[in-house]
Length: 298
Image (cartoon, rainbow, N blue to C red; front, side, top):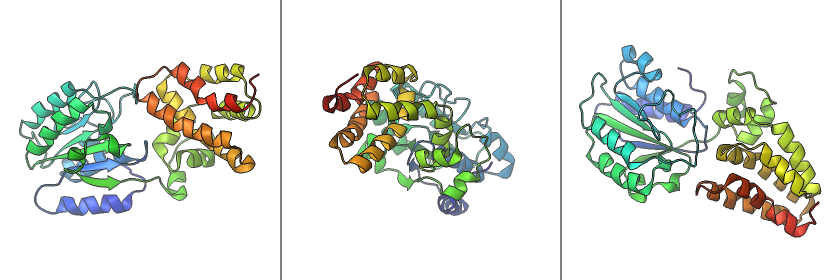
């Protein structure tokens, strides 16, 4: 299994694995797609005998559980239908508690990798807190979160935080992939996150750039509708916000007009509203609200 970057984090955790005794539970936090889950799976494998690593890396080992919404053990670190507006329910946590109550089957160290732990409901987090307090020394939880502060302080205080950042340009460019878009552009948009770059690479970035250039010069309700037609769901809207912010901040730097700063600030509010299950169509129109307040619409 190949992990690009994060060598300092990996080396530190491998040294901890080589020491006798329990491995503390951790919170891997940082940008979406930065490699947190890949690193967690790699550590789970390297902390167990070599004979077990293949099954661990292929998610077939009975003592390495990847937890997400809906399914306790999905086919990959994150489900195909991943959607940030969904949540991890208390029922998922209860299933985890049942598994943790049993002894490990094969592993020397059992790992529970909790994908997108910040998607747990408040009820689920309170239930998980009890699991975290009561699990045996052979089990290590690794919580994966892009928003550290959505987790209860009582959970954060019981795990060791491990901060992930984006890859360097050299590390990013070493990733072997046939990019649809310019990798330099993807590196800048994703800030060095390969996972985020892969998601952006599947989106109509050129079309979005053209629409944004047009609408920021000549506000048009018709263009807002055209932009909405390219956005299928809340995940698409979250991805669209990335080039949107780049475009409005470039305009602000060039013109100094406050409307572009307001648009940037509005995008933060829109992102929060996405997580509160608001209508995507309504949010796309709200995203450009400040623009029409300053400029006449076409």
